[in-house]
Image (cartoon, rainbow, N blue to C red; front, side, top):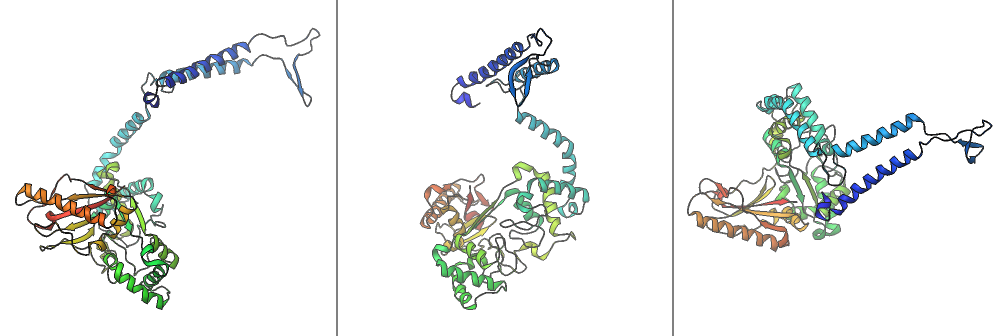
Amino acid sequence: MESQFTSPFWSFYIIGIIVVSFLALAWLLLSQNKMKVTKDKDGKPLTMGHEWDGIEEYNNPLPRWWYLLFWGTMLFGIGYFIAYPGAGDFKGLLNWTSHKQYDEEVAKAEATYMPMYKKYAAMPVEQVAQNKEAMTIGKNLFDTYCIQCHGSDAKGSRGFPNLTDTDWLYGGTPEKIHESIANGRLGVMASWGPILGEEGVRDAANYVMSLSGKDHNAESAARGKVHFDTNCVSCHGPDGRGTLGMAPNLTDDVWLWGGTEKAISETITGGRNNQMPTWSGFLGEEKLHLLTSYVWGLSHPDGKALATDNGAVAGAAPAAAPAADDQASVNFENGALNVYFATGKADVAAGAEQVAADVVAAGKAGKKLVVSGYTDSTGDAAANAELSKKRAQAVKAFLVAQGVAEANIELRKPENITGAAGNNAEGRRVEVRVEG
C-alpha cells in the first residue's frame, strides 16, 4: 500500500483513528444509558431545560431498541475490519482483494460460457453471422466494448466510423475486420494549415468538395487542385478515391469529421489524429471471432461478400504493394510505414517524405515512432544483420531530417527479424509504427 513507500506511521495512524473512534462511541453510548429521573416530585415530566418555538425535549433515556441496534452496528463494523482490509495495511483474515474477486468471477464466467464461444470460434465468420444466438452474444460484446465510440446502433459519430454501411478504409473482409479489432488502428493526417495558409486551405477545401459533387467555388477549387496534386495525391490518390489502409475516399458522401466547408477546412488545417485501441490481449480469440462476425454481419445482411470489402470504395486505389523488383520504394499499409531498399543498399527512396507525411506528423506531435529493421533469410546472416541496422539508422536519420525529434524515435529489434524466406523486398525493409 501507499504507506509502505513512505512510512509505516500512516498505517498505525489510521488504525489508531479507527480504535479511538470505536472507544469514543462506546463511551458515549454507556454514558447516555444511565437511569435518569424523568419526573419531578409532583409527577410532572422533566425536560432538558431548553425550548424552541414552544417545543421542549423530555429528559428520557435512549430507546432500548435504538441502543441495542447501535451496539450491533458497532460490533458489525469491528468484525468487518477484522475480516476485510480497511485498517491501515492490515489485509484482513479473509485476505480478500477486489482483484482476487474479479479473477474468480471471470474464471467462473469463462467456465460457463467458453464452451459456447469455442463452438462459434470453429465456424466461419459468414456462418456465425447468420446464427441468431451467436449474433445476440456478439451484440452483447459490442454493447459492452464498442458503443462508447461507434454508438448503440453502430452507426458511429463524428470521428468514429459507421459500421453498418459498405465504406471500409481498412477493408471489410472478415480478415480485415478481425485485424482492426484485434490490433487497433491509428489514423493520422498531417496538418497542412501552416504550409498552405488560410487561403490555400480554403482553395483545397473547395476542390475536395468538388470531388464529391458538393456546392463549391469553381475558381477556388481550380486553385485548390494544384495544392491537391502537389500534397494530397500520395495518400488520397490522383482521383481522390482513397487508398486502402491509408486514406479515405473523398468522392463519396461519407465524411468521418464532417463534409461542410468549415469541417473540411478544419481537417486540412489541423490534420487529424485518431486511434482505435487493440482488443486482442483483453478479449481473447474466441470473443474476437464473435465480435468480428457481428460487425461483419451489420454491413452484410445477405451473408455475402461485397465488392467494396477490398477497398475504400469500388475502384479505389489499393495500397502500394512491396516492390517486387530490386528498387527502393515506400508505402503505408496496415498502419505501418514500410521503407523498402535495393539489394545491398541503405538509401531511402526519393519522394518518401510524401508517403511518410502522416507518420512524421505523429512524431512531431509527440508520438513515439518505433523503427524496426528486417533482414533477408538468405546470404550471410551477420552481414544481413549489419545492413539491417544501417537501414534502420538511415530511416531514423530520414525522420529526423523531416523534423521529428530524436527523443520520439526508438530503434527496436523485432522478435523475428527475418522478413521473408528468399531474397525479396519483405526481407529488405524497415518498418515504422506509431505508438503512444
